Length: 439
Image (cartoon, rainbow, N blue to C red; front, side, top):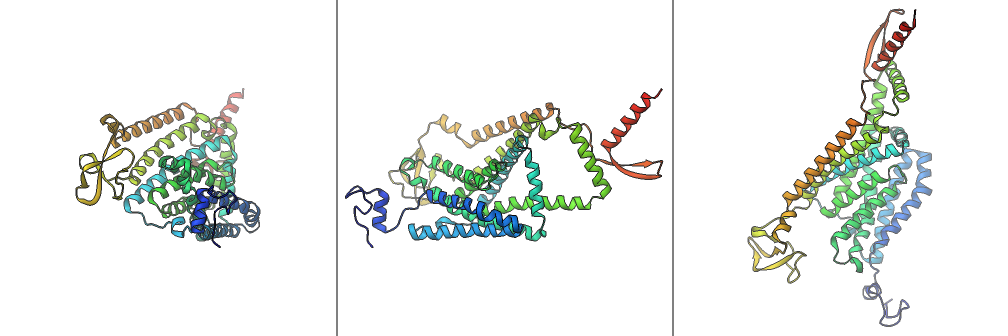
């Protein structure tokens, strides 16, 4: 049925741009709120469908959850294609990054991982239940064989969650560039897209303790996808991130099974003793120590993020401060901050116009890669040194090794007994105090 003027009740000649688009093409416009609708639908499914599945079926329920999210992503993409004509290649871009982009994406991921750890340590301080939840998650994951755990908690989330979040939802957020108030404000749109993707990913996990760490990770994934114009980097990095977690869970489980019962019981006694006698001096209950750790991680993250961002934003500089752009159609409208030169084509690149910077020499120096690198390095050094000072002056560093095992000969029973250094010191102190009390 063809559309006619006044179809939407605004009267002849008062149609909005979106109405005109529908009238001309018979399609709606792909908008940012499509992704918000998909996000809220995922939250409803997680609460009322997926949570009961995981409660009753364990890891099998988690696998079903990931499949439901994948169906939501693909179904949303199919609906968007029917309503707006937006193709799968736009929603799920699968461009293979080059070697430099891969290196940059890896560096950005590890920088984001450092920031995520810093946020996690701060969360542990303000919300001590974090450690208990981590233990519950480990117990939940290790109920199945290791290869199956890799499939369910690493492979499936990397595909299914990324298809929803960095696929459909992010593709809809990127249409913010077409909003009248944001047209031409490319940098602001990128910040909004990255921030929204991070926030949505953090809220998606339905856990206030993990909100900030997962939001950071979601923003990092969104950034690398924007720069590589592909969903593949976030899929690979999401898989890598989850694999690390699964391996650590199974390694701790295997270690607990491998340690002899006597040593394990001794370690548990030492842990209880240490928790009772030195709770206030623990690293993770001392704010100054936690802040120091967070600052050190932030300093390392800054270096990695800067290096990764530089790799993802590589620009080929030409002679004489000019740049050759792959798009030869700028004409009289070159990129902001540049002007077309009179020389014509760029040397060695026929068909590419040459543009020179309009900024002054001091401005170019302050914005030069060397100046930025020096600023990042100095900031990182300040964070690292300040963090180290905070940890040293916090008084939270242990003065002894309570978990070092020693063998002590029990003369009464004629056997060697496994104990810990902390228990040995405690026993010697007790015996000496008893001896000093005797007349």
